[in-house]
Image 1 (tube, rainbow, N blue to C red):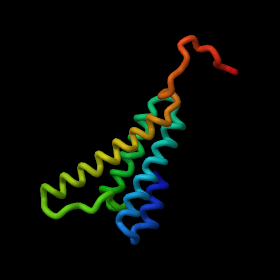
Image 2 (tube, one colour):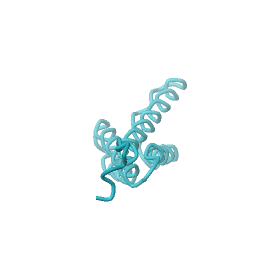
Image 3 (cartoon, one colour):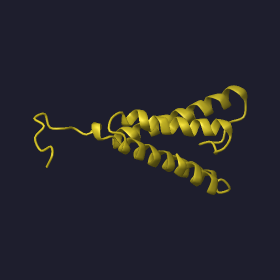
Image 4 (cartoon, rainbow, N blue to C red):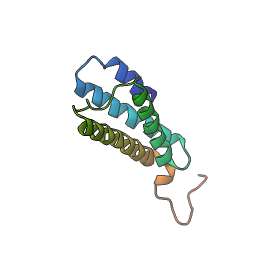
Length: 113
């Protein structure tokens, strides 16, 4: 999450596509690291990274993933879709990195080598 915040702040004046790419890379990297550090429940820890970013986004400390559309309902839908995309991406990368996501041997041989 810290990576996403730093990249987002540094590139906030750049083109919106760069800000979105930096945000997605930072969230994916942070969620991957969180899932890697978690012995179990990598999906949960990855999703927590996404939740943290969404909270900071709601406070206004970090940029949004996409620029909100004009209008009440369209703006609400675009914000919800962007936040759902962030949470899904974070959960996916946390799950991918989790050690428990890898298949293990049913005989448990090879452990402790």
